[in-house]
Amino acid sequence: MLLRGKTVVVSGVGAGLGHRVAETVVGDGGNAVLGARTGANLVRSAAAIDPAGHRTAHRVTDITDEKQCEALAALAVERFGGIDAVVHVAAWDSYFGGLEDADFATWQGVLDVNLLGTLRMTRACLPALKERGGSVVLIGTQSAVAAPTQVRQAAYAASKGALTSAMYSLAHELGPHRVRVNTVLPGWMWGPPVEAYVRFTAHTEGVPEEEVLGRLTERMALPELATDADVADTVAFLASDRSRSITGQSLLVNAGELMR
View 1 (cartoon, rainbow, N blue to C red):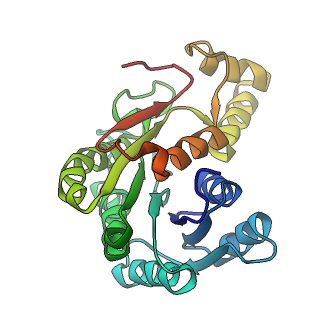
View 2: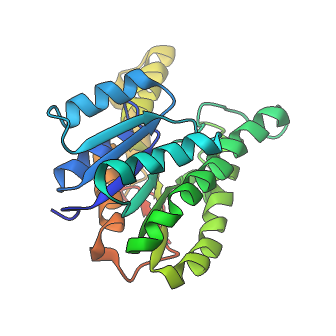
């Protein structure tokens, strides 16, 4: 019960990692305050995690809107008395391509969500975090430090790389308030997006899904993909007091595909 009595704000709660993080928070004894742009996702996730509604709260939140970020933080304080951690899952990860085919207007949108949106949400939670000390957990990506060969997501990788760079400054700025800032870097993570990629690739190439999955796992020290639940467990550790002396760090969760 790593998070017993803790209140954790989770942005970007949908069918994948955001839901898993919120589920893990409640499973580890905490209260989860859920934010996302789609209200139906929030209702569905909260009902699945906490049918009685005692340990969750949710509010529609677009992290590009500062007022909505402030409203989500205020909900956490009103409902549970404060904030102990904020986990940033919300991201724009569906834009693909590299430099030659780049639409820089779209790149700006990706940066506004993934970099500035995360900073907006952090700032909105900061007064409450300062009262208790606490943890900010950023969700980055392995592709920010080692570009995958299967797909191009240059804008997403660049935005997450910028976020990791911002982490170092935030760790120094917020450290005197006992607020820690760390980043989790998932690699290929078994969950809805990668499941869809495996199905699509297998269908397109006319090969079994196991073959496509094997191409991914053959480069990993552990012979299986990390799952979104594995990443959520790592997030819970960094949100908890067990990691009280860890700040300004990036932790790869990738079954050993990339080691450093």
